[in-house]
Image (cartoon, rainbow, N blue to C red; front, side, top):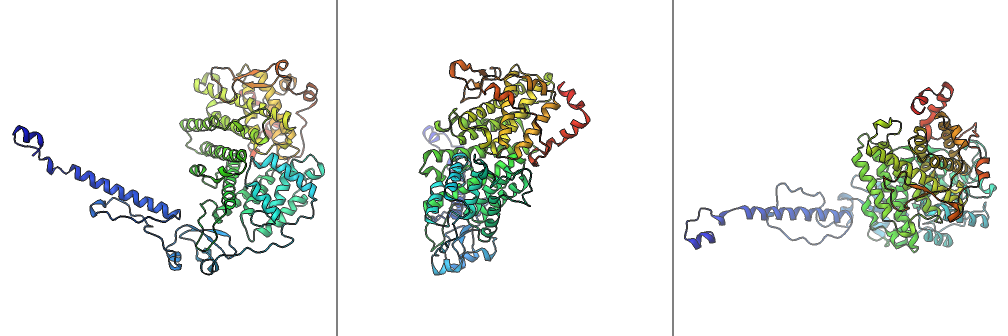
Length: 613
């Protein structure tokens, strides 16, 4: 009888003690607990963690709807269990090289008997010729390494610098190889101010690389073929750098395929998984853990840059959660660690942008979500990674990529090429955003030139950023939709000039410049472009935040008399002719979309006069 009925003496019409609601809820909770424990056990088993002793639950706690995990209970470590009840794991071959192993993997990929039964392996001794480079003198090697550390390492970080240097000094083959050394030298030679050294990687004129390879390319090809017979983590790193070199040479397909090879080899060696050593193997060193993680995120970065550059799908899936526990937070150089993390998070977001824009079902809501994600990355940057005029080359390149990402996100809704009467407030705001970040790209390029010299030392990442800004600037100028026309022409000049400077070290930049100049002519902008005057440096109203959409263009003109002249010398700008076309250009798949402009120049400009006249 219910308490209320008992006190009043009334007959009880609701037999609350026989109500099964509470009992049902308890059973449902117990079933849920069982399900969560099973999921936890499965996760721990996959990560190689020991499973705690489980407590028996009453039969009532088991629900018919609860899925039964395939791998339950503690995993035995005897040879029969490892052969027949296999989960993913990292096994070691006869030479101690880790390999990724899954339940469906063939038996020949399992760990070596010598490791699993007889004990730990010993590394093979290093021969005198293994790391000796006789064709480049010591002074030149130091020069090339310095260039690599300064201009490329912290932008495209694929290995731990100190671990690499220690291994090279100790002649330890685990973290350094001849192939990797030659690749690093080639990356440095690309931006060297010494013509003889630059010629070691960049061909003279339009020589066919297959017929007459530059010295460093030939040496890389020779040693890479040998190293691929017994690949290791340095092979992955060398493949990534070699793909970068072929991109600079304009051989996009070969470069993209090399990055794909590196990503597949990364999976083969299991660097995309946490390192869990087999029984009997020595525990991994902190250097190995950091090297593996940096190499994996290096693969992810190169993969996504190629996906963005060529509009291709990415090979690797980025797990954002692993960024929180990545071992680069423990690097000796805090700034280098912050740069690695900032680049990794930016490139992950860039990959999401690329995937969204290249998909058939892209929505404005998804782009707005990614825009907020990209803005959050910028707002949460460490102070040392924020943009300043005197900042390092890697920080400049990172902010160029950020600005290009903003343009890509807003370009679809900016509706360039449409009638102004068709634009709503959201489209008008997207146009302002695109133009603002395009002029920001020009500002970054000019600051870079004043601090670090001309654009020949820029990475290829900047080429895509400049091309993205150029298309926006030309569209805005041609449609005469902004009262910041003079600023846009000035910014366009900076971009074209930088492309011309990049030709010294990035051959495909010549073709991008040629296409840019061709579009300027087709859009009837050549006369205005050549007659425009140089203007003071465009300065954002707020270097850290996106401009207010109500602020027209979000940029002002800085008075050189107040801060010191930072504009290009008038003579230098007027003496440079942006329309000196080259007859022979290296082909690049990235700009093949503009091949129709060649036909347009022959048949007339009727299609464009209607749109931009």
